[in-house]
Image (cartoon, rainbow, N blue to C red; front, side, top):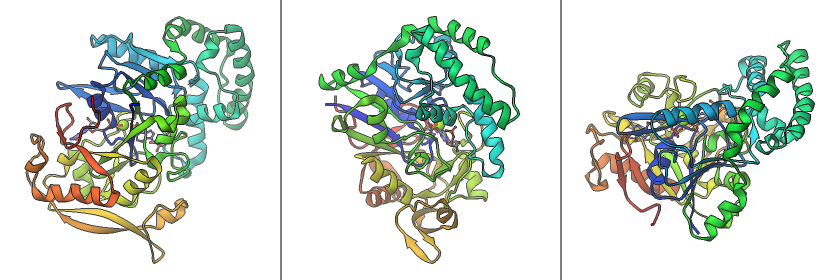
Length: 429
Ligand code: GDP
Ligand code: IMO
Ligand code: MG
């Protein structure tokens, strides 16, 4: 069995895309299991930047089959734009498929995302406004449209008419917005069908069979543990489960078939959107991290909030995912800092917490308890062996291992494919 999972351990943007691309050269399948085009995964190859929102980050390796799995929400317009963009760069996309069970993000979901955020005012989540939450809400309300509905156009028409009435009621009566026209929507989706249907597959049996036959299947997470609908800083979260459990639910795979679960840890913290961020730096150090790490959203372009590494968060991610390996990214960004803080726990109302409380109000009141570590000056982007890293950098990495009780298998020291230090093989092929 060779089921590999790559997930984010913080608030997203840890560099998952780069890591999936690096590991992607060795696998037979790369499968997205949750989220949608709220993701922005950057892959840089020979200086050329690709930002993937919906397509799996293995797409540049055309030998692997890339599947957008059942648990993903698919905006078909974005999907086709992304396919066109990749093909315009001379890369074929015949290896990209979408599950027939995946739900469709409809134009009214995108509109509702914006209306709902506006209605929330200063309580807004700060979503990517891609329609993710409204689409998952319809899925769970059992009024969503799925890829498979496109096959039988009569049933598609019926379902669209039913759901659109409910959605238009909400848009017009609650938000005083403009109703969506049924005929217009239908025409657009009929036009899309010919391009989408050839890529539609039933992935459940195929992936199970692949794993049974010892094929290498890499499950690519979007977002991260702290944005998880159950275990993140609710309600400042996304609407899916970006954890290893999300793979089982989102692809239809048994947990027994996932043997390697890799958590990507950025060497410091960032967050896009609203919600508590205990180690946030609103000073020149935060600005240093944003500038040097180029911390601007890959999807929305928003400046990312920056702060010190929070090991309570990494421990939380280790626990809820059952991580077997860590990949620490962007360690090069820390070069040049005299001292580096690392958060070991929270103090809330005079009490020490070593785990993440459920109450977002408590997390807002939390004060970080830091260990202060000495920094290093050297540019480490060119280093390829752990032993050659500056001593203080090694101490920093060892601290992450010690607290999370999980081995670091790879250290990323730059954005390109080859900017890595390998400590343990993740994919043993
Ligand atoms: P993802 O959403 O987890 O895939 O991460 P993003 O692509 O949104 O953000 C990560 C950013 O950091 C991208 O611009 C990457 O090119 C860049 N990056 C990834 N790893 C490294 C690294 O080790 N060092 C530096 N300097 N940049 C990195
Ligand atoms: P990747 O895969 C960082 C954040 C949004 C917002 C919250 C809910 O690139 O790591 P949503 O649109 O999902 O309803 O927004 O989640 N968010 C992300 N932040 N990286 C992402 O993806 C994110 N996807 C969603 O900013 O706070
Ligand atoms: Mg991202």
